[in-house]
Amino acid sequence: DIQMTQSPSSLSASVGDRVTITCRASQRISSYLNWYQQKPGRAPKLLIYAASSLQSGVPSRFSGSGSGTDFTLTISSLQPEDSATYYCHQTYSNIFTFGPGTKVDIK
Amino acid sequence: EVQLVESGGHLVQPGGSLRLSCAASGFTFKNYDMNWVRQAPGQGLEWVSYINSGSTAIYYADSVKGRFIISRDNAKNSLYLQMNSLRDEDTAVYYCARGMLGGSGSSDYWGQGTQVTVSS
Figure 1 (cartoon, rainbow over the protein chains, first blue to last red):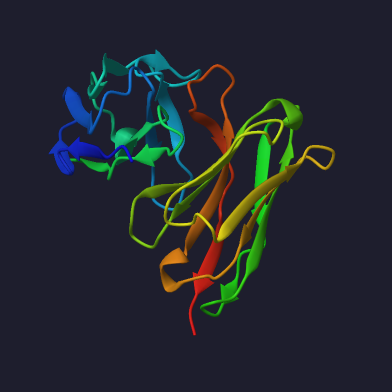
Figure 2: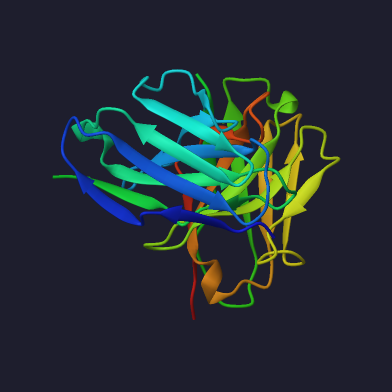
């Protein structure tokens, strides 16, 4: 199975900061990589699909990049409502897998 | 409006069985692939199973293979998860999620989840 890792596992940043979360796959997955945001007690929300495509309705401060094994999610200017846990998710193989998550807090 | 509503979750003893349902509305269900994803208390997301629109492709996580069965009834706009031989570690909130058309396997709409608790 393809294993996904994320770093950091958590971070604290100020409003307006640029935040970058990285995700690494244990083998090449082309661009079959998605990013979700989850707030406590809520269902996940799709932010980015196919590594870099912004889901409809998602603010443009969110962006994704990468291909192969290394991917990044960037929040260009952190907002209070971005406090959440972020998960990467590969769909390259027939066994999909999520990363362990990155918790983002606002200082 | 797209809606996914899960049901069927409750307390069950280890070794027992449970059938989850997901009622879909607001879109043409038969055209979309579907997934089940779960989240154990305080833990991250775990993909459980996938079924394509015509039920011709079905995949499972290793942790549930041989115990869970995913199915769908396109005439009833419903997705199901038959869960057998349940274990303590199957305790989680179970979400159904719609596969996004042209979205590289991503899930663009999720239900609110149904709680499954496996305990004696």
